[in-house]
Length: 125
Image (cartoon, rainbow, N blue to C red; front, side, top):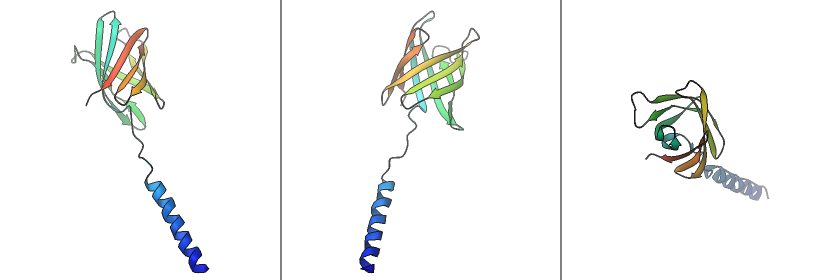
């Protein structure tokens, strides 16, 4: 009986260890390179490029205006994220902080708004 219980113990231990080994590794969905298009702004349609990098648990980076990369940089001041939503805060050219809200659509695209302007983002591969 003792031999059977030891065998059963190791069998159960193997099943539990295998279950933990199969757990999927967490992914960092929002980190990476994105192209964010804003439609209908006073400056016309604007496209920002960004590379969101996780530092100390927070996403950081800068938004670069694709039409003027040398002068069109906006530092991301903070981000707020949940499982399927990302809010990027940055300083506008008028001097105030504004929020760009994006929601996950699928594995490579986001949709949202910046104030009253429609925003669409796609992952750059």
